[in-house]
Image 1 (cartoon, rainbow, N blue to C red):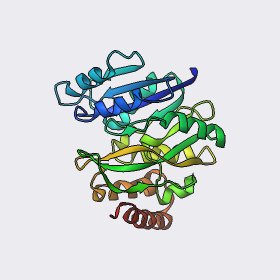
Image 2 (image 1 turned 135 degrees about the horizontal axis):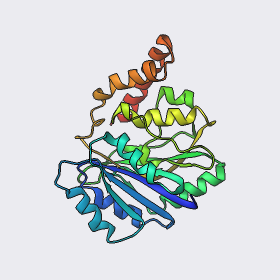
Image 3 (image 1 turned 45 degrees about the vertical axis):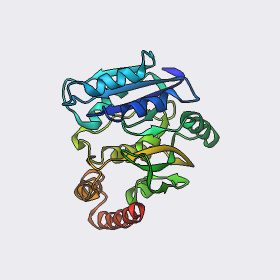
Image 4 (image 1 turned 135 degrees about the vertical axis):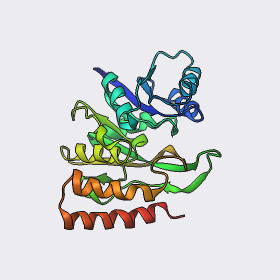
Length: 256
């Protein structure tokens, strides 16, 4: 493990249209001690995403591109990348999101300021094609704990960084596929640490895609309930309470 290296975990599925912006955002970072591991999840695009990723990487040896031989979902693709990661710090970046140039520098500084294990940040919500802001920026709370996360999840994967010297590297539950897998990931981590710290600075552009699995929030209702009742097993009445909290907060979060 390299002491100050950040390993950037990027799953990709049919990512040709947007991976260029994502790679450019990494190449433009003011913090340069990073490796980026892009895992193409057996995309049915004749290698178009991989070709684009290689083109924008332009031979930079810090960028590693892996082609999975089977489709394992975002959780499986992230696990492949996590298995290859050599850095002390783990950061996640989806293949259609864009980091602002100071993302890594600010998050690592914020992590040291708070003596934190896990940090996450506020983010802009942009149109998938025009990149114009379509909802107000999401400003994160000061902290996230296991209990608060049962009500709502303010941790967007592309904003999160954690320190493997303070908590073991965690792998994703692939049985969940691509629905709420990241939510369960943070719940699992927050069972073992006091909290994650929220950086209120806006450091990421989240591209809101209509075609994404979670783009239609109605698709998330059953998986959300399953996480509370079947995965976390918090009990029937607490599950109902947390589910109602989640539904109300989600409505406020996504209203225009």
